[in-house]
Every structure is written in C-alpha cells, then in structure tokens.
Amino acid sequence: MFPLSEENKHVAQLLFSSGTCPRCIFRLCGVDLHAPYRRSSKELFSDLQKFLETEKDELIVEVSNPPLKKIRLQEDGMDNLSGNGEEGVSATEDERIASEPSNLSVCNVCLGILQEFCEKEFIIKVCQKVEASEFEFTSVVLSVSFPPQLSVREHAAWLLVKQEMGKRSLSMGRNDVVQLKEAFKWITHPLFSEELGVPIDGKSLFEVSVVFAHPETVEDCHFLGEVCPDCFKPAKNKQSVFTRMAVLKALNKIREDDFLKQFPCPPNSPKTVCTVLGIECTHGAVFVAGRYNKYSRNLPQTPWIIDGERKMESSVEELISDHLLAVFKAESFNFSSSGREDVDVRTLGNGRPFAVELLNPRRVHFSSQEVKELQQKINKSSDKIQVRDLQLVTREAIGYMKEGEEEKTKTYSALIWTNKVIQKKDIGFLNDLKDLKIDQKTPLRVLHRRPLAVRTRAIHSMETRYLDEHHFRLYLKTQAGTYIKEFVHGDFGRTKPNIGSLMNVTADILELDVESVDVDWPPALDD
Image (cartoon, rainbow, N blue to C red; front, side, top):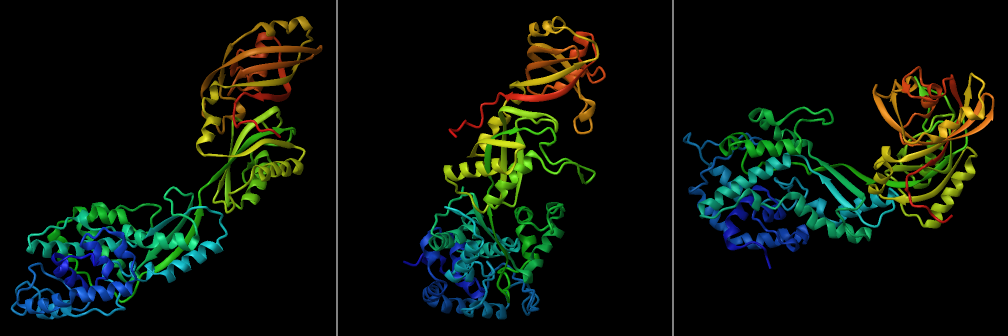
C-alpha cells in the first residue's frame, strides 16, 4: 500500500518535480511508517510516478494560479519577478516544477543521503571497512554526521509544504517532518545488522561512524551568519562556525519571510551527490583491575620524566600496562591506583589496588583462563613487581577504588634512625599513642605538584621494635594520605607533632614499606 494519501498528492508533485527524492517526500509529508522507506529507490521512484500521474496534468493546468510565496532561483540566474515586475512565480518556473526529474538526479533536500547511501552496495562497502578494522564486537551502534546545510534545505522544503498545505486548510508542523537521521536509521539498520551478523544497539561499546560532506553546497548556510550572527560563535575544536547545532539554532530564530528572501524555496537541485569523508570504527574503553606488589626501591609508580629526560628506565605502570596494551590491541591507556608509593618504597602484603583504562581496544573478549595467563605473563616478565587478582571490571566499579579514599587506612613498616643513643624504654611510649592527630603542611618534596595546604591526619596506632642504640623498627597504621616520611623527620617543622619531636631527638627514615592498603577492591580471586 502506497503511504501517501490524496491530500498529499499536490505537495508530493511539487516536491517531486523540483527534484526531491521519494523518501524525502515521505518525510516532508509526515510518513512515519518504516516499511515504505526500506523499499529500493527504483521501486519507490516508479510507484511515486504512478501515484502522481493525474496530479501532473492538473498541476500544468494550474500555471495561471501560481503559489503566493516567491521562489528565488539563484544558480540558474532567474529571479522571482514575473514579466510585469510583480512578485510571483514565473511561467518558466512552473514549467520547471511540472517537468519530470531524471531518475538519476540528486535529491535537492537530502543531497543523495537517502538515495545511493541507503542501498545495499554502500552498506556492503561500510561493512567491509568494519571487518578490515579487526575489532571484536557482539553488537554495534551506527552514528552518522551529515552536512549542516541539509538542515537549511529541509527547512526550505518544509516551508513550501507548509504553504501548499495551508492553501488546502491543512497543517504541517515542523515536528511532523520525519528527521533525516531517523529515516536513514530505519532503512540502514536492518541492512547493517544483517550484513555484520550482530544487532544494532544504541548502548553498544563498538561504534561505526560515517561522516558525509557536500562541498558544492557548503555556502548554503552562510546567509544565516549574516541574519543571525549571534548563533555562530567560533570554537577551538571546530573548523567552521556553521555547525549543525548552530544552524538549527539560527533556523529556529530566523523569520520565515527573511529566510525566503535569502534562500530558494524549493531548494535548487545539486549537480553532485554527497561524499563520504570517512568511515571510522572505535570501541569504548575496557577496564582491567588488580593489585600489585612492588619489591624494588628503584622503581617509580609512573614514568619519572623531568624536563623531558627519563630518570628511571621503567615504572610499575609500564611493567603492567605495556602487556595489557599489546594483548588488548589498544591505542593507549590510563593508569590509576589507590594512592601511590615513592620510588624507594616497597609495597608488600596483599598489594595496592590499581585499574587500567584501555582506550579503543580491538580485542575485548577474554576467558578467565586467558586473563590468568596474562597475569602470569606479567609476573614472569619482571622480578620488580607482581600482580594478583587481575580481572575485567566496569567503569562504574573503579569508583570503589577511589570511594572514601581518605577514610581508608594503610599500614607501614619503617626503619628509623636517631642521632642520640636510645634504649628500648625510650620508644615504648609510642606503643600507647592511639589516634594521634597530626597537622601536615604540604611537604617540600611535593610542593611543586601539590597545592600548599595544612592537612590533618590520624596515626591510629604504632608499634615499635628495638634494634640497636640508633635504630628501631616502627609499624604504623594511619589514615590514608598521611606523609609517613615527614611524620618521622618533621620536614623542618612542617609536620607537627613528629617522631623527632615526640622523642626529643633528630630522627630520619632509612627504609619504608607499605604493608597493606585496606581497600576491599577488586574482589580477591582464587589463584
């Protein structure tokens, strides 16, 4: 059943004669059934011609009673003045409207988007590009970017429809027009799904984006910049001020009569079809989490680069992430962890939680056994670190690692030196101090990357083990975010109180180990 009714016939003929494709005629007449759009362009063209046969004859007869709205034809050198100098539609224009467009002509509204780019041949070309990209995916989301001038042309066509419908006491609101992207999706989504063998899912992490352009009509939008200059603001990441959103804003603002003075209605027929600027495949980030132990006192957590010069040959981040990057075939990564240790500090016990965001990975499906083998590969590659509980996690789950970070506790073991001779009894009192509050001004050693502030932290408990007259071992359980080295030596009085002031000695820290990071994430796995 043909989707247009008798009341649409006159408008459909006007549009068809001006060079509008059948699918755009459906859109402009408010046809929101999917099935008619999915028929081939050839069938639609033939059926529309049959539907309009009687209307064509009637339209030619109506030349003496032209539409009231003036029509400007810019490219063919004709203006909107009739022979007697009065505004109207000239006989020549009516002859053009009444003539049949070529079956091969490019639509004056969609510029070919709903013609050859909705056919199976184009879908196959896109799918070949997708398959060549070697991404793993079980669903796909298709995104398209159309030239902004399409909105201008659609607006012009809608004004024509609105005017002609009004003559017959019918209405056609702007929202009644089916959006180009909607029609494109109705046609192409089933074809893409069939060709790729996976469902189209708007929430899919795998995206295929197609960008269209039409250089011939790029200046269609420019008059809007003169009429509505406040709608077009330069943006750093945009090559042109004539973005789709800016054009739509201007079209909502411009008065109909001002628009009709500046742009032909119906739009002129283009000589060329849209071009495809690019077809790009991207996959949303995947996240891998685990816990790491660091056994070296010469290994930074992240690459240590000062003034462009690398200070250490590797880092915890690189020893872990380089393997993940290769296996997941990702473009890049972001590493994060629950706190960090200094280059000369070891992380022992059950390790420190970490997460790696892998950007645009081509491989995303791994069995638990494959992840376990990946963990073993990382652990065999270096004796400086070890990884445990390696697993795939969601973006949301990473929030657990950072959630309430400063309320968490961490346990340390420190080797302390004192300038004065000490006995076992001199350190015993430290064992009795509970929830000691200290004020720490931002340490001098991190002042270049941290804002100056005074932070109050808690030393929940301490336990001492006497070694000799100048050394003892100190075990601390503290609030996360406490600067342990500064708590020992005082940082020139910037941390108060400190071990030195509490014992009335000059104290320094020789070795520091993180014994535990009390964050219950990620979940422990059975190795």
